[in-house]
Image (tube, rainbow over all chains, first blue to last red; front, side, top):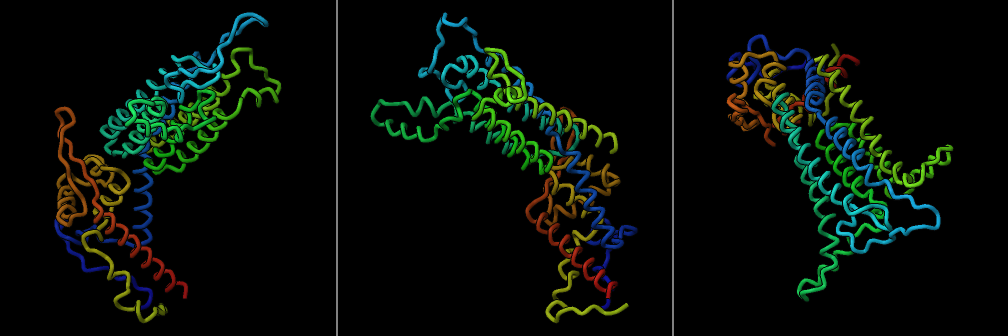
Length: 269
Length: 116
């Protein structure tokens, strides 16, 4: 047999199976190289994740006013601690961290952001000619958001007796993860991880993992304490802001870099 | 050129060329499958521009792939403009994977033969 590479019998008509005239396969390494380049080019043209990154970064920045807390002079006034009656505790936080309007803001921001993301991918597919299946990301994140909305009220249902089993849903409460009112960041992180899978993007996977780390830190720890170690004191009332601005910064920087990279690709192409 | 020693079981039926599907083993059809495998679906115009084909030529290649059940062609409108979208099927994905595997194996044998 030797090193000879044999090809199947060729047929010259383009409408029939087999290579057409002048289109016969050259060397296999060259063909494999072409396929690899074509795959890379197609994937780069299809990527459109910069917009969801920037969008959710901006939505996070827009939530900043809800995290600024009133400052009372020492020894005067009162501060409400514990919000047993909060309608959306997964989004609003506990222990007086946030107001009810913050919870409604996040409910609207998450669902609105998902709708805009879906519209963006639909528009991008029409413009470029390549569609990404972002549906899993959109539906998955929307389901998480709706669960975060409905689990608290459902788990407190005590009557009628036939619905008391719903209190078992309380096991789904994520405990300390909702205390600071930054739980929406974890929902966004899950959405980004699913989007990275749909986009088949290593870069977005790295971004999503970094963002998930920043989101977890914001959910479980006072980021202002880290700033304090570096000699930066956050003013009274603004102690929660670093917890919001850190994830927002990750999204905005990553989104801007992704936009520049995707624009560069279009210019080269 | 020195002959490559191939195990008996691979020497005839196991040769990579026996796994090659002639429908796929064509540069442009391979390109169509490669592009559509990378996206949920690809638009006719994108395929035509990227592969450097005329509309008629691309249509003929798509017909061959569609008849073989490797792609699905969906026609629709974007506003008033007609759009044709191409989606790879699971059969198309399998054929592409088999073709890639055969090509890689051919290259491996070729290099082994050159090296010996």
